Length: 111
Image 1 (cartoon, rainbow, N blue to C red):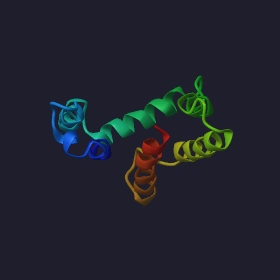
Image 2 (image 1 turned 90 degrees about the vertical axis):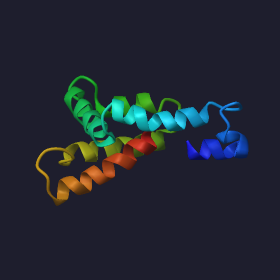
Image 3 (image 1 turned 135 degrees about the horizontal axis):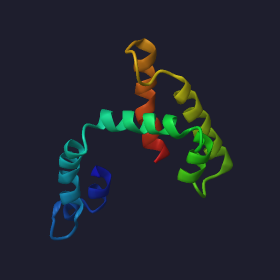
């Protein structure tokens, strides 16, 4: 959002010109309304893991990255498969903390 606002320079902060300032303000409210970011990240992990029997992680990645190169799809699929095998949720320990730290940027770049 900051980058989008900065593209318009001074006009990016004027609601008369752009809806970006309102969206930027609402992000904080929406995050609280929809629960905290960590909760949402955890829920995405659980959902992907839960449905992996009938909706494979590879199919999910290919769907999200429709139109991307096969190399890119393969890269994200491998990362997702790796993260799903690691303890992102459950007992807290060094391994789960490391996996959770990787989960956030993985989703950021995937979407």
